[in-house]
Image (cartoon, rainbow, N blue to C red; front, side):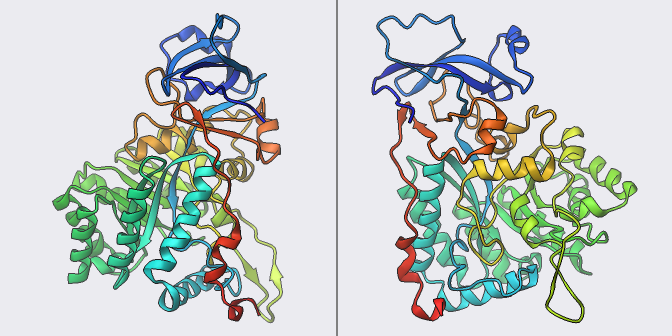
Length: 448
């Protein structure tokens, strides 16, 4: 285990850091990168902040505590741009019956109707926060089911947890309803509630005959209240599902100035080259960022069964959007956790390193690794409006993760369970919570 000095001032020596996460004024550092885009540096931490960043080997540490990381990597804390904390950890009582998106949706709705009380949501959401914090996440955006009674319940729980965890995690919340909800009086009240709570206006965009009217309404509600937008978009393998194109088109047409996030965007990868080019060109003219959810979509998309039986068939695509093409076009691209141990994704532990690791494998985010580490740190932080998170630069708080893995093969081949979390310059002793903490939410009826 890496031992961080218990001192107001100390050095982390011989740390490999992805160059793309460094914000320094020394252009000559670029030539010192490894072939993987890592650079070996020393980091001075004083009074909880990064006070110096220097090339390794040129540091005088006389009379100052230091620890030799022996080439292990140091990253800024993670930023998880798209989660569903309110749904988390209901798998044991409400598993997906067939692994499909429809099965997930129906099961989640049923669970919320039966069991979602303020106490239930609070306990599960805080369990997720404990996991995230212990793994090294510093900022989270969560979508909250917000129709009907949940308009008040979920947002009040979120507000309580945001106050309790304010010194450890930065929390943003997005309203989650189908876009037709905003055509109703209840939808307008929800927009008011989101504005009151400092949230983001969001929803699920489906292809339907009223989509243009729905988009006009949600954009107007956001404009009137100076809110940002965050949509679930094209979470399917249907090439005719082009709500991403329509949102980008409307964003440009309406000259919407606040940030917009579009999540999933799966169908883009099965559309024609002409539609892809048209969509990407529109995105380049808008202020839209993309968040892909590779683990959840790998689980749900293209799950097939025989027409004559319940015999599973092998999926033929991965369910992820065009990460490389979007990024090459200059469109901000990120990945995030999405669901965790609920009907939409049976697995997960709120560990953004696992998200990055799986994304690299699913999306071939290597050869070269380049600046892909930004998708769970710097780029995600920028899209959340957090300009001092997800990067390393002098003068900001020392919120870091120290790994023993010295290169990407080592980092992504093992779990890095022995990583050290540094918050405001001090090592954090938080441990991953025991699943037994949730036992009182699972009765014998759920386990038979």
